[in-house]
Length: 234
Image 1: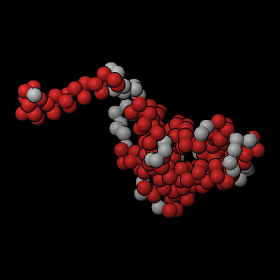
Image 2: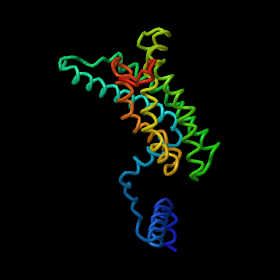
Image 3: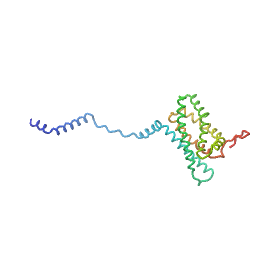
Image 4: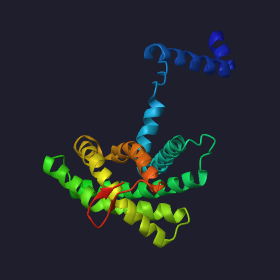
């Protein structure tokens, strides 16, 4: 009775002791504590990659188009400097800014264009791929070349008449080169690649193609003209 009375006289101690014993039993029955797994290397990069090419695909395509057009113009200007022998000449940053804006404007167009193509012509059958290439070359490529020369010319301060004359002079040169570059490039794009990587892949090829575009755009002595005798000259 005395021991029982002592326990009753110390209820707080007994309750605390009971909770401590209960926790110890629960831990012993559950086994050793599980350590949190270390973060997987590259998991944050994978999450960012999925966001860039998932929820933010339009933004990714737009920004990458602008950056790659910018890089293309920088390389084109370096080629011009080397050709002219003027090593002291600085980069024309206004021109680079204009080309960047042109690239940014092309990003959403390519984004929605490929979405429409994949919905209108689903699958990777050879006939489907060739149909997409035909649409790209006969319909979209002439529009792209025309809008490129007009938008770049207007941003650089040229009049509509000057832009039209430039298109007359340089369209054939660019369109012939377009046929040599883009049909095989687009075959790989439409036949093997996932739709979400189409614009990124095209932008990678476009960075090299933009060097040619910027070089042609800003050099009046490199063009194809069709004279009265139907001869082609540069």
